[in-house]
Length: 324
Image (cartoon, rainbow, N blue to C red):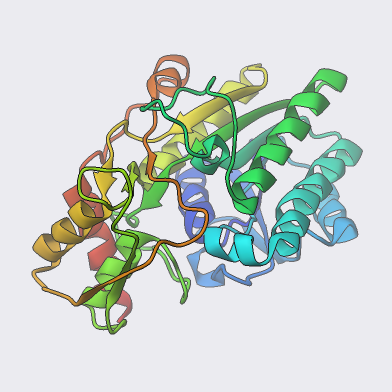
């Protein structure tokens, strides 16, 4: 049985990937400090509580498990926070990833799947974004991820080390079976905040910035269902197990929606005309990010199942209602 070590596997995206890995028969070990993750979201495998800044802890857990591959999700992801506290982001996202990679080297593990982000592109003029677009991140979060991508590229040239870097666009929704979803109390994803406001868990929804150079003045993003993203991870794993070399793939649908469009869609799906307040721009937010996902479809055979904004919102809404 193929063994997969998953750092950050109790978090929002990691837990959905672990669910799919378990359903497909992989043996999983989750390594998570539970700072933002939830142990109840780990539906398969063994959970080891530990921090990626603890090198000896990672190495011990990895040596005990002897994985065939590592998936690395553990990272800080809030753009405005990264602008305000850059050292926290560089320490956790860069030093933490280096610890995981060094532990892999010492344990003889040579396959790595990395959670990257569309934030590595910065504010590009061309849309949709191909993977060969020059990287020019505009915030510490994006820069921290681009740094790790550089490390992976260099290390794979120096050693027999194979990796896939998946550049996520805006991940949203919840497990359609309703078993897991977003549990983080201070989640910043727009669709999560919309449905939480509709559930009256928040007083109002804040929309940051109405003066962007977009048709309605609000940011445009490419929203991808979390289970389609999970499927991309399993395909990336299969690619590496079959001998694939280092590569980078965008994970998005290739279609963007503005914040206003998402808010209107959320009101329609939930049937709740929840309060919305418009506020100034947040630091570090690019006006538009939309994926060109041709490469992952052609090379990994990725076929999205949930490419529908209404369905994405519906799964998030059903989850929020379920957890009360």
